[in-house]
Length: 117
Length: 148
Image 1 (cartoon, rainbow over the protein chains, first blue to last red):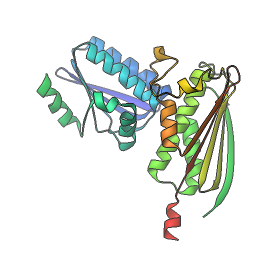
Image 2: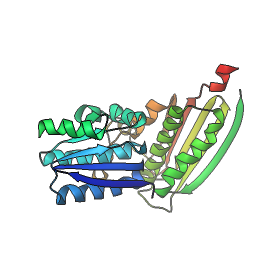
Image 3: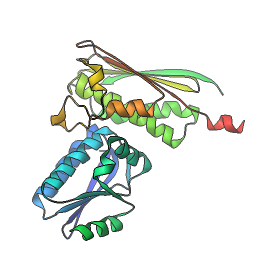
Image 4: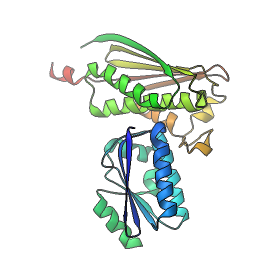
């Protein structure tokens, strides 16, 4: 499998670290793992940590947008951190840049969420 | 520097082959010495086109076959990705950003927009039940040429 999903809960925040390549083939794993953790866990917010995400295409945008709607529908926020330039470019092109907040690293993303929670 | 070269691949419409296709093309075009950004653009458009054929052309039926041809002429890469699937009824609508015929599959509707943005030339030919062909071109300004 070319994508690994690592989940870590820090207080009311779920940190999702994606490692590898996110495309149509690997999108389902991200969808199921995140959905399961969000619906079962006690998290309000999600940090999508993308330092080790080497590749993403528009299938990735679809799965991110879907989880954003889920988190937002439950009254939480989803933020993105550490995205490579090529991944950022897709977020910009699709307009997702306007509805998600972007941070340089996990620490600043968590700090950013603290302010609003 | 001028290279003339070409390659052809046909593979089953299985989602595992999306990664295979983009890595194969990236590896083939590396002889033009592209930048990492250019390689990434090419990998992304191949991934978009092959994914479209698999999901929309063949409805995830692995008995479908996706055809991929790449040609290098001078400093320009031409990519043809073709399927014999169900085809696209209205290409104008399909090319609109955020349009998707399959919202239930969480498609972002950005595939065509990305291909048009990342390549210098883009052309789509399709008709219902006659498959879809996407032709794209990108010029690679060789790093080598700058130093020669």
